Length: 159
Image 1 (tube, rainbow, N blue to C red):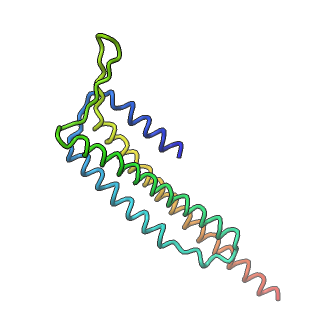
Image 2: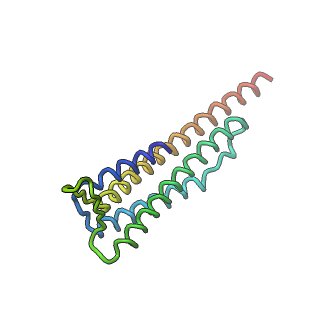
Image 3: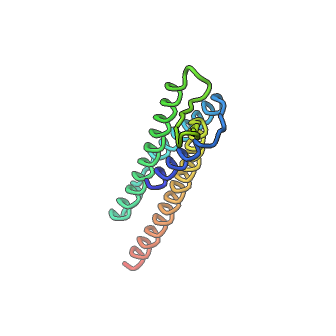
């Protein structure tokens, strides 16, 4: 959660850079984030911990998957809000800019397209990081199942 708010803060700070990102770039990147989100959610939804006999470990793994799901949803929700706001507010102009009067002689122009681009780029990397977390959870599950099977086999042989 702190990482997401930090990314938003950095995105806002980047608005002072006077670079305008073309709208087709933003549209394409938002599409990529949407695809990553849907693939990630399908991985989370199709998760099955039924093979794990240890209830505590199963609950721990499920908790990890719930956290990843929440990350996916939060990131995509923020992206969608920022993206929609940018295009609704900037529909009549090429780029949304805001002028802030710093002093009597200095005005700062904020260009929000770079901010949106920065957060969308962050979102791609954050979702990829969640994919890696999912892979780690799957590997942990596999290792735990092997460990449980070995333990069960030893108990069976001991009888």
